[in-house]
Amino acid sequence: MSRIHDARLELRGELEAPPPLRRFGSGWISGVLGFVLGAAGLLLVVSFRFPSILSMPETRELDQNPWFRLALHAILISAFILSLLSLVLRPGKTLGTCGAVAVLLAGLIGGSRAAALSSTQTPIFFGLDWFVLNVLFTGLLFIPVERIFPNKPEQEIFRAEWREDLFYYLVSSLMVQILTYLTFMPARTILAFTSLSTLRQWVGALPFVVQFVAIMFLTDVVQYWVHRAFHRIPWLWKFHAVHHSAKSMDWMAGARMHFFEIFALRSLTVIPMFVLGFSTAAMHAYILLVYVYSTFVHANLGWRLRLFEKFLVTPRFHHWHHGIEPAAVDVNFAVHFPILDRLFGTYHLPKEAWPAGYGIPGHPVPQGYLPQFAYPFARQKQPLEPTS
Ligand SMILES: [Zn+2]
Ligand SMILES: [Zn+2]
Image (cartoon, rainbow, N blue to C red):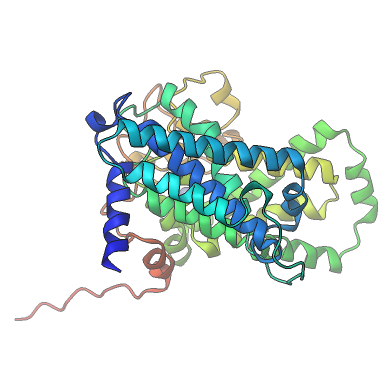
């Protein structure tokens, strides 16, 4: 057991290696890429073997797509070559070995040709393949841009608490079925008890762009007030404090959110979108936008989007929402349109400046997924009575 623990520590030490040990030619880049791609390939192959339990119904069709299989094959081959390169270049062999072992394991259980072990359908599934696709897509999209245009150039990819935030990605991806069900449950209930057919028909017939912008605006109005309630009502704040406990902002930071907050925030914000009868195409386009946009506003991106930021939320705007200084408390609640904060008196965007740091003063939220899950339910420690 301690060997596994030691190997984990060694692997973590390699991923978080200091700059001199990461320089070009040191085998770090090839080692990290080889390990990440190898692990991603292995997890995808595992989900191919147990599709009814570890794969989303929406992505199960992808599993059979020859192009997707080819992409997986390319991932495994690249992971193996990169791991070998790292083994040659790097004195420490942990990264290269882990990457190569992941590829070999993936090959042993079927590789890119892996077939399902059983075709029995199960009522419950976990989105393991969704987790891999999620992290690969978001990471590939944001890491290069964050490296080229960083707000904090000194911030590492594997910065403090990166494992926690990755774990949030894992949990919300695995729980995709229950989260989707819970997200739409209140809206479905409202729809079952109301008859809005004329309004729904009219809304559904509006031009796509009008529907898309209307969804953005309506969800943002609801989101603004729910978000503000999460800040202002003390017991709700304990849930939302988990999101604000992030001390570093980047593409992973936004994933940190208490399970109950994800449910409450999403289910309330989708109500107007779902109840008013917007077309499926407009809803899907919006869901895709918000998926990328919520990562974008947390990203470590130093872009000066002067004209853009007058109308739309930017990373600088949302970074101020996460700022640790007193001026950043309870400001910038909007996710798309800053005008909502202007209207309701919570706008704060000092010219050119960025917050000095992120998090909650005193950092009251514990570290780790489970302590953070329990945090809102824990009793506040009472100060000891002074003894005389
Ligand atoms: Zn907040
Ligand atoms: Zn945030």
